[in-house]
Length: 444
Image (cartoon, rainbow, N blue to C red; front, side):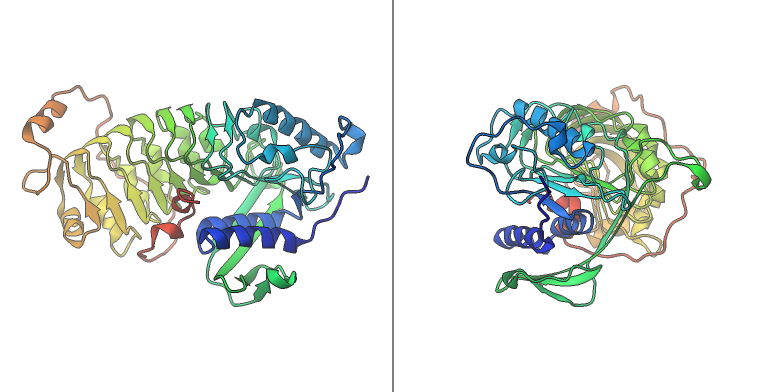
């Protein structure tokens, strides 16, 4: 049976209606979803469902082996779901993964760009309130995924492994294109690299996208690690995920990592330093992460957001944090950090950096330098509820003394000058939290 080709306007209209209803059209999350789907997804996974019972699909019923494999993965995952209040999984039947009304939440595209073989490239289960014990054996078994967004569900277990995903994606999103009107009401749209989407009487959003899809297998390009992906989005805020972050997280090449409001524990793995050329935003807020603040976190020189607030991290701020030349939001509040707030970090709010907000409240810091003192006065740095003499709103001396008397196992800050990765020039910007992809997913 031939595969039903779906018009791009169907994808656009569906997303835009949802965004309009939720007033999140201007959020970077919407931009990310729209860009990922429009650019890599030629066919949203929905088709007309039959009212009659269907026989079990066979391999020959699918256009290619990739979609048959995805079908098996989806069916296994479906069998583990214990709660589906919106009855989404009722559409996960049959062989047509890439139609209009079946397999809601799954989107297909041709990631190789040459053989035109369809594969599942996007999974968007955001807000469906699905309950399942784990995502293992699901996300990590769909090797063509560019986007997985499943916030506001109740998925448990560990973070799924991403290092086995085959394809390498490059994604960049900005919000300053020239105008080009597209109207879903008339079911007419010209999808291009830059444009403007107008939702009838709702609101208007600008978007600009550039997504290149290909496979790198070494050769003249240098040593490419087999099975490593480049620039993916993993958005799993507000679930019930537990256990440690994967030790090989840094080989997943994610660009947007949002894991806030879960029950993750253990250390931030040193491998995160391998993401220095790809990670743009990381949100680890409100988990149970512990251990020393890793030196490698300071190597993420392209990251605009690093938020590990409300955990149990400890140690001094490593000298490597002076390399965060692109960071705009740095939140380490409500942890067990101590020592001096490095002046080199505070200088990131000056001409050489872009830092607009530095949150360090609720720790055990004991001193600040001149640059940090200036940021406190300017409202950029929050150090309330620490142990800094001479500043207001600090912890009680007895509480500070009790903490200082505890054994400290984290390495002292090195006095050796840190060699930072080459930084791109930029300027300090004060942006609303909703303008960041990861922060936007806290509410979408």
